[in-house]
Figure 1 (tube, one colour):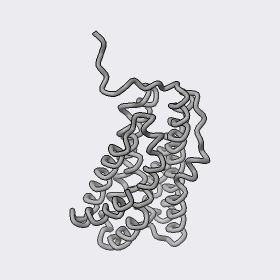
Figure 2 (tube, helix red, strand yellow):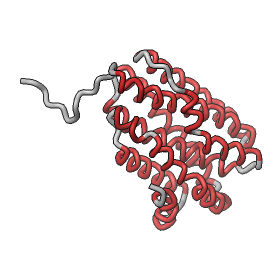
Figure 3 (cartoon, helix red, strand yellow):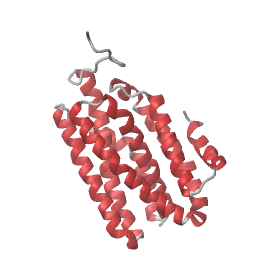
Figure 4 (tube, helix red, strand yellow):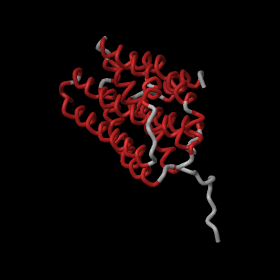
Amino acid sequence: MPQLEATPEIDFHSELYKDAYSRINAIVIEGEQEAHENYQRLADFLPDDKDQLFGLAKMESRHKKGFEACGRNLKVTPDLEFARQFFSQLHENFQTAAAQGNVVTCLLIQSLIIECFAIAAYNIYIPVADDFARKITEGVVKDEYTHLNYGEEWLKANFEASKAELEAANKQNLPIVWKMLNQVEADAKVLGMEREALVEDFMIQYGEALSNIGFTTRDIMKMSAYGLATV
């Protein structure tokens, strides 16, 4: 008796899949590279946490190598130019905040927004990934929770002093996430990832992170609305 599948079988070697994968794979590679650089930059501002931040940066570099291997496994060349453009707004905002010494904004962009975006994407991707990529991604997503936890703990310890800057940084950067999700909706769907599921998982991760830092439910609803207004 044939086994019933919840979703249609994905052909990982079709030209349609490989074309979409060239952009999605590039995004995760570039995302890990950006994270690697961002944690190294954060170490300049937080010398007491330097060893921990360099450790996080090394983990991101290792993730990048893992995702590069996923592309090679499917014989796909990642479209890194597309990925750099994809992250350009968050990248520029992080660089601007770093130049101004706004470490709270830097942490919100990297440790909350980018990490929650990555966790949501990996959670939705794992059930529809090829066997090789699934094993790699399952290992990566465990590490990403460690990175998210670093930002949560620092911001929680400095919550009162950080609250106003966090709210301003959220207002500036959260709408960018929805633009990013809209930009890859078609490619993600080819890989079996529905946009609604990505949005839902991101909102759960991000809302929990804001709650852990010290924001009230009312605060979180208000802050989340800045993103939802652009959906």
